[in-house]
Length: 100
Image 1: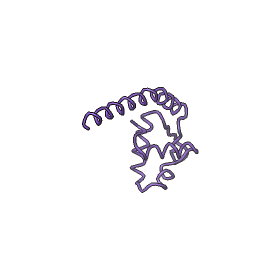
Image 2 (image 1 turned 90 degrees about the vertical axis):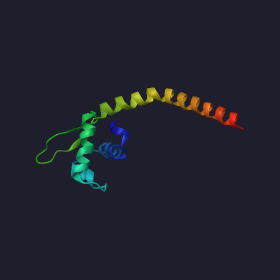
Image 3 (image 1 turned 90 degrees about the horizontal axis):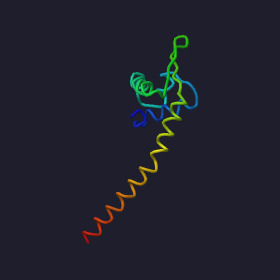
Image 4 (image 1 turned 180 degrees about the horizontal axis):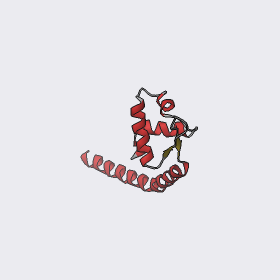
């Protein structure tokens, strides 16, 4: 999943503030431009980021509409995840009670 990596989440957060080149995205990280490019490729393949040619640079842009779709899906799954967590917690408490 494209947003499972903290570096990619940070890149998305940075792009939420405006377009940026690979060089600009590399600055806050201790990563090479090649590593940032690989992260951007994953984000591009997920449809969360696009890149365009502007003179010699290729700034990356956040695809806000796609990110909104992802957030809507996460929100729709939230209740199920909470319910599963609660059932697991109850099960573990029962197991702990049986061991006493």
